[in-house]
Image 1 (tube, chains in turn orange, purple):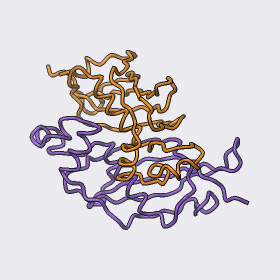
Image 2 (tube, rainbow over the protein chains, first blue to last red; image 1 turned 90 degrees about the vertical axis):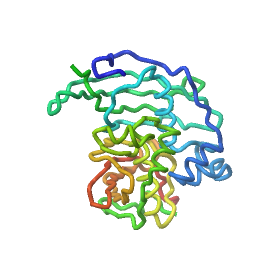
Image 3 (cartoon, rainbow over the protein chains, first blue to last red; image 1 turned 180 degrees about the horizontal axis):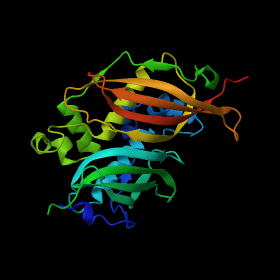
Length: 148
Length: 148
């Protein structure tokens, strides 16, 4: 188990695994959670400024989260997610895109109110097969400190 | 079709529909996108500070997004989502919780670079059956202006 103390600031990791985005997955995800016509229907999407079916931004973050888990060799003693900040989607995720993610811990501090816990902020960057950035965001987790 | 001009600032809406969160849905969502043990296994979750299975924060935002769509009477001429900000999860979402959401447009402005488009910021608040806030966040969409 990895604790707060084991998480190193400013070390970046890149996912070995990738995730290929299919039309079926875009439509299934959007159909359940974000039913916008341009995520569900190729014809509607082809007439949009994107020129084709593209993924919901929620779906993109889901893929980033999934890839993030593949980068962890050992369980981290996370209590809960506290928040996310500054999610940006500079380019759309199109059918056939192959996504990869990079993570870096950009801030960590011990909780003031609960000294057995720390707060860790991770910057995520999701890129496509052309190394274009398609999403950036930060997430903040509460992580247990190593028991004495 | 609703355009940028039709979206009113500072008017809040509450979803008529609700979403009941089941253990099956928590595990299915987390299994696919956010496989943390406390979202997948009741026994592990019962030993966590939450005291039971709780939903991934990504899943909570997905439910908020889905409920948000149920509040729209007419399609909005959205081009794309630009970003999300300040996502906070003050309380966990537990099995059996019944979620509802409130939305309010908190900022809108015409794009400087593309005068046929506007940028609209919506504040979302997701509450449970006890009217406790379980998630708050803002999302920013690019929306077409009404064609002349």
